[in-house]
Structure formats: structure tokens, C-alpha cells
Length: 631
Image (cartoon, rainbow, N blue to C red; front, side, top):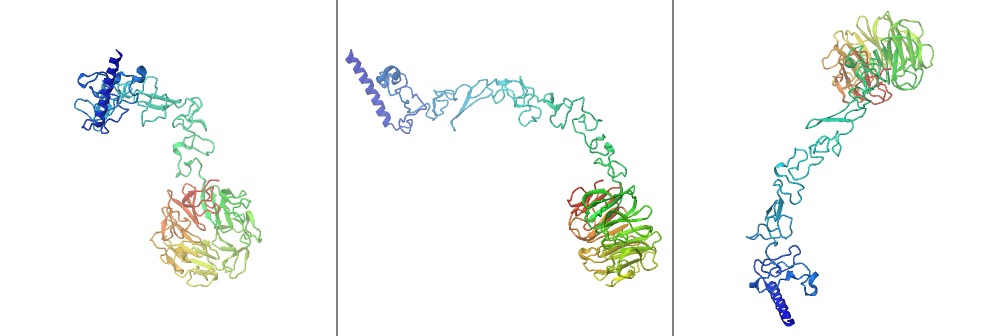
């Protein structure tokens, strides 16, 4: 018996050895390219081969190698390593009898170990890939669910059409969810767990969500919410009933507002509350100096702002201010004029007062003492107009007689001498003047007969307009026999308007401040180019501005700090329009800045702002008109 068993084993091993030798020498097209390299991916071979778990008679098998298990047969078992692969199912080659061949014999990947397409899958050969069929009702592969025709992307709790489960964020409100905006939706009202956030309400499908104003919860676009009991459209400073804060324009007078008429707020109406909920300043006139400016209110109260190094603001201090401050005292003024470092004004009764610097006796009070508050000009004269610049002051009486006082080194006082006048001194001659203007060292005026006269310094640029460069100590008529209604004096140039509103200028012409296309100085009047007519005109150091009859302002000359107010810093010899939404009633030029009064009794300024002379509450320059702050 033992010999028979040994013979049987010997026969089996011989058969296996023969098969292995044959496999090692194979070279047909169904043989693996490495002729029997072991693959760990596939653990079976074709039927009839050794190791297919079947004993096939025509191959000479007496037993099958797969029946030898190392766990049960010990040393008599085959090597426990990977099964050998030769050819057939699992080799990645699609044979005629195979439905698929994905290069392995693992189950559950779409192609079965027998190379049959598994239920719920479809396979391609090039490339060798298998895919689940979502929607066939078979849950296969990585599909979470597959309810066939019941798959839906809109039905709550349904398996989705990509065979994924219903979930928060898919745009469908499923069981346990209160909201679901979906990808790309507005999640303002919905949490990451698809719950409605506090302070919101969501209705409908698709949902429309809105905050609940009045619930005391600030949500969404709400900027406040004090609850139904505290939200109010009539209480000052309260959160409004639409959950927006109290503010200018809501018709309720809140803190930091001086008025609020709601929709009636208007920047154009003289007496209306402004759109920033401030009352009109009530400024009826403005006067610009070199680095400060002053305005008068409807009651005649004087306010000044800007540089104050000599007390020229009249507020009893030497502190610069960036917004209007009241001139001290109870005086009510009818006219005000600002110079380099001093200011003068006329009361309603025509009495003259000055404040600021007085080193050249420009106060006319027989002293050289500066004052940061108004002091009366000596003499008791009644004046109708007053003009100032750097070191001298002039005024006209109600009878048209001119008086001047202060420095007189070029004869600018018109008193036929170079002697300083410490009190008002009458200008020589019997001329009756209607307007008067003061430059740095010269003076000009127009008579009631509409003739222009100038006196003082003339050796630079011909600013006296008499056709010479000779200074004069008494009034000299302008060379051209022209009629002028009004006149203005800059530092070294002058301009005047005819009765027809035509503008003429003469004197210094750097930067074309005369309004002509050349830079040539002119000792006689030249017409401002552009063909415009004006109602009033104002000249200062580097530029000139004028007011058209309809209320539009124009400027020309130097514009390096935006003193044209046209949103540029480009110079121009032609008059260019000031950018403004309002019509002006008066315009006044300072040194590189300008100011104007609008019909609604507010002052606007533009240009340089080094000392706060624009009255904006800052020292930021502006190339467009900006509203001066109210006191």
C-alpha cells in the first residue's frame, strides 16, 4: 500500500514538473509576455491547467495543486506564495469568451473573477475601465444609493441622480433641514447644518429669506435692532423701524444735527435745512486775504478763519483756525475786507474798525500796537466801503471822498508825499469815487463818472495803467479813455469792468493773469480774451476771477494749487469755469485760493489750504469748491 501511495505522489510531482517546464518554455500569443511571471492580482488560471481546482483527465492530472493547502497539508502543500498567471481571464486582454477583462480577478470592481460584467456596471476595453450605472436600480461600487427612476435632485430625501444621498447643501430641504440654498446660493440666513439662523425667516420653495426687524437681533443687512418696543421712526437717536440707524434725512432731529426736515432738506433754498442736516451759515459776503478769509452773517456778525499769527481773525487769540470763529465783540458789520495780516470792517453805521497787524499804522488809530480784536479807526468818519492789502488801508466816505492810512513808501496813500499816515488822510484832488481797491503798494478807484484812477508804485510792471512806469503820489487817470464801473487790485496788476461787463486788465502778466495769450506786462488796459462779460471781478497775487451775470464764476492766470476750482491745476490765460453745482452771488480771490458766496447764504472756498483758509476743518487743499463749515 505504501509503495502505491509513493508511486502516485511521484507521478503527480512529475506531472507538475512537466507542466512547469512547458510553461517556462512557452512562446505562443496567449502566453504571458514573461512566460509565467507570478501576478499577485490574479489568483486563477484557465480551466484544464494546473491549479484550476479541477482534475482534467486529458491533461494527465491526477490531482490539482489548489487542493494542497499549506494550512492543512504542511510540507506536502505547494508554495504558499502568489498563484501563477499564464493567460486568460485577468490578463487585461479581452478574449472572445470574456465580457470584460480589467487586468485583475478581483470581485466588486465591475469585472468579476470570471471576466463577466457585474450587475450594475458597464465596462470598456480601451481603456480597461468599468463604471457603475447610476439609475439602473442596482447599488454598485461606490454608489451610496440607486433607486432607479426614483432618483431625484429635487425631491426631499430622495437618492440623487448621481447616486449620492440627500444631504445639507444640495439645494433641497430634506428631513431635519430648515433651509438649503444649495451650491452658489445665499447662505446668509442658513447655517452649515441647514438650520435657519437666528433673526431670519424663510418661506416658500424655493425659499425667500428675510431678517425679522424688531426681534432684537441684528442680522443680515440690519445695522441695528433694538426690538419692537424700542425701534422708532420718531424718537431721536433710536434704531428705525426698518432696522437702519438714525441719520440725517430721516426727519428726526438727532444728536449732532442742527436740523432735519427729511425730504425737504435742500442745499439750494436759502432758508432750508442742508442735506448734511446743518442750517445755512447765513454768510452774505466773503473777503479773502493772503492766508485768511472772513464772512459776514445775515445779522452782520463777522467770522474769520485761516492764519492768525497777528490776530487777524479777531477772536482775541493768535491761534490759526480751520473753521470760522466769531470776531469778538457785539459789533454788527455791513462790509469786511481782508489783507495780508490785518482785517478791517465797517459797521452798519459806517464806522471803521480794524484788527491784526498794525506795524505800519494800517489801523489808522495813531498807534503801532497790534490787536487780536477790533479797534476803532480814528477820525469818526462815516465810510461806505473799505479796502486793505499788506500795509495800508483806504476807504470811501458816503460822499465819495477817499481816505487812506498806513505805509506810504511809494505814494500809495495818494496824499502827495511819502509820509506814513497814522490816521485816515484824504486823497489829493476833488475826485468823487464810487469804488476803491488796494494792491500791495498801490491804490486804484473809479469815479462816479466811471473813470479809473490809480496811484502809488508803478516802477515794476505798469500797474497804474497810465502808460508809464513812473510811480505817482496822487491819482493818475488810466491811459485809455474808457468807462469803468468797478475796479479790483491784485498784488501787481489790476482789472476793471466796463458798463457792458467787458473785462480789462493791466500791469504784471506772469502766468497770464491779465487774461491774454502773451506773458507781456502791460502799462495800459488790455481786453481779457474769450469774449465773456462779467458782473463783478476780483484780482489777487497770481490769478483773477470774475462772476458772470448768470452767477457762473470764471478764473484765469496761475492755477498751481487748484485756485480755479475746476478740478485741475492747469494754468490758463482764457477764463475757465469754476466747477460748481451752485450759482454764485459774489467771488473773492486770496493768495492762491478763492471763495464765493452762493445764493443760499453759504460760502464755498477752493485752492491752497496751508493755514486752514478754506474753512473746511482741515488743511487739505481742494481743486473744487468746498462748503465752508458753519461756526
